[in-house]
Length: 290
Image 1: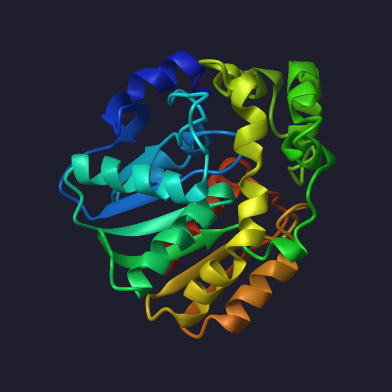
Image 2: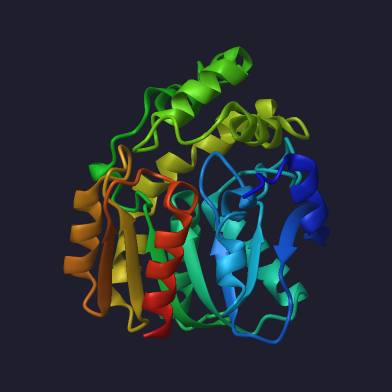
């Protein structure tokens, strides 16, 4: 399969103005049921270029770059709160005419998703959700094995210095550590990720973006409470060799969410939609359609 480069991916989507900001969005269109995807850190919607051809056989898929990520705006005057990211996602989906959908969140996106779930539980559901799929996200932040780079970037005194020192070579090395097979991605695809990370002044906002980790502690009771108390079907699709969002987290979630199901993917790291796209899609579709 031909790898989709940054320019090709940009051409597959468009920019949508939401709340005075520009969000990059890929919308496959059509009249099929809607699947909304919230991508992870520090990458972008591009993570799903392998998965989209499989998913679109069954769904109208909508995936956008969060503010501060990919080709979306990277403003300096923005909180980069996960709560605000939820607001922008809702506004985007409404602009696209979405009224009902299945929702999938990976990594960073799983916390945005659980914020939406908390609002649903409080009776303020902006879009009717049919289900929520969680994929390798560190909602149980106390169990996460955070990378040294994440800890340094979010630190108020040193984060900006670390961001200035970031380089393609360092990025390549750190990203490869997140895969079960470190050789899976070639330099070309890692360069695409780096290009999108740096696009539009990304280096300057990287420390602020990385501080989402602190919100996982701050809103722990809100988000874990939302999962424990929901009546929405919750699907857990988890890569077992994730060095950050470790397998134990998936089992804890499954045990504490009464109406959840769990599928584990062997031999796959933190980005299963990249490293094992066919198996990951099969697991997601099995969860959603059965």
